[in-house]
Image (tube, rainbow, N blue to C red; front, top):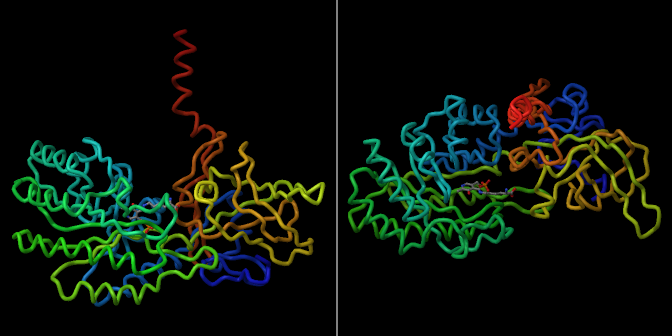
Length: 435
Ligand code: LLP
């Protein structure tokens, strides 16, 4: 990748007079204000993606449930709520986040293979909209807890349609070897069982076959497959109100051609074929990935001593801030914040300060760099900040939301006091009492 082709339209980052901006805000201004590393998101990009998806489905009755796991910052949840989104959650922690921004519990779908008793009770008491049930054991557990609480749980069964999403194996979920959902045969048995239970209200059917899906066929195949089961259930006298297709809509990171969302929307309408069903989707990445950049500063340049050595740009962000390259060999564009550099173009591995050779953000990138330069790692709005850790006792980076020429910090930088708090009190107690 050379500097020549970096003005990519597909992300929220763009150059204005050689300076990389998010909306009308220069990234250098944000670095001056909050330091680096920092995650920076564009409010208008998030809004536009939401509207794009919603418009692609205008002719189909639908509800978008934003998948909180992609980026769970409260400001982002509040924004999607204001646009009319419901939420897809996978833990009681995520439910607490939705409730913290005043989200309607009825707009919440609870997915995930390992819902604990405490999580189920919390969700039942909050009155969530639907449990996406992933196993017989979970269904029995929800029945028992709803009985104990004297309430009725809305349920959809998550079907594993055994469809290949053609994506990275770690993020494919719809194949029979994956832990998610149940087979159609088992799903039928679970619907028949649940239909007899007074504490269960069967509202829908669900699937989610994977993430970063760029071809429409697997998604359409999965829809066709679960509709067959829905039609069988209808004949059995079990009438459902919604079909949940999950998330997974791919985005461009490098040179992928993502799914045409309008064509996909039209095909979904055709396949639903006038059935009286609400379509639900659970997008995460599509809404947030390209809305965000990770802003980082070059600490040191280690130039190759010999021709067969590499050039390393050691930056102040690391695998604890962005795990995707290390975990999935994911490719993220790296751009200089100031494009007017007179430095020589060299091929750099962009690496962090963490003591692991797996700590890299990008490899073999042609860039003109000097120490102290700011660079931006693109497309990190989904599965960026949420996968951050404190490895090497590094504080989590702040998050910033840009709105035009204004920006605000929506998560402050984590301090070492934040990190050691849970241990320090115990350590002090131990020191005082001697045991
Ligand atoms: N619904 C369910 C049940 C899911 O498991 C997921 C993602 C989604 C919706 C949202 O999928 P999306 O629209 O974002 O593709 N950490 C990985 C991605 C893991 C996805 C897990 N499930 C990555 O960085 O690529």
